[in-house]
Length: 388
Image (cartoon, rainbow, N blue to C red; front, side, top):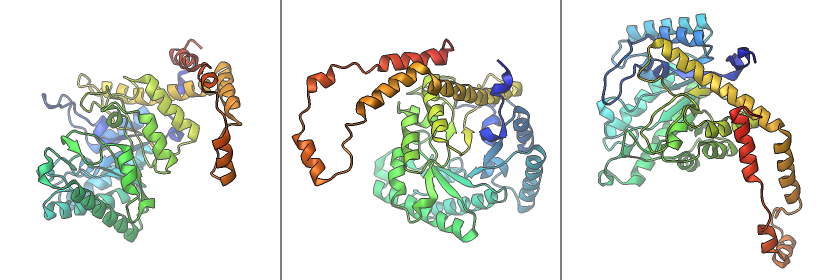
């Protein structure tokens, strides 16, 4: 089988953040193991491995204390590198979690000065992203939470977050940026408890916004799997609601700290269902890898990591196509569909309700029939293991 089959192409829309392949391998117990790369060097690396685009936080690209002249030079060099290497910038975001000023949160902090600064910093990050024609703006509220609920009413935090989002949507409209905002959930870390812990929590919150059509979600595999949730279900809910504006692909052992492992390196079966869903519904957005290489690696290893993320996605895409064309799987699915086609409840009508209430169900007969889910699951494993 030709390796070209799994080579990334522009139409696959694979993207990485400056903070991903540029990660230097530090953790809470050890310092960096790789030299710092410039943003230009990262763009060149991504072009070498075949990525479509690069994304950035404001301060990934421009250090927070840069002068205006320094920012202009950095932006000029980065633009040239992207143009020279045909690398796009589809998404931008803002760092509202690193600096000490955000120790009590950003949009939800008790100090009004902190909240105002957070909105100002986000507006400037939006300006920066717009210089590169970014279409999506992701917001991860990593410090929007608590260690103790004694510090504020949760309802106040929600109201403050809503006020900030409404303001930022209006700012985007005033500048004609055309941004779609994508909210990224996480249950904990770095705060003990984060206010919007799941994709579902954000989907409910979005409905309360003044410009809810501008705001969707950015589900992340690791963030859903940390507490043992099902990423595919979160993505499907977001898609069904018309709110899947972006997605972060990586991997995670449930119950651990945020690991950001190479895509599908821990949970290939779960990753298969995710890829299959995205491909089956025709998701047209970016496939962004929010992950980083092991601390053991040099930059050749980082390239292996990046190539591995993209190749594994394409392998699972191929497996999904095989699943959809598999004769026995198709037969079982047709049997399920055929058995159910005349039994839908449908929309409510008075006559329909009366008919349903008068209907007799043979519970024992219905419960006696095997559903062949074991067979379906094993056929899935056969495909994943390459024996069918």
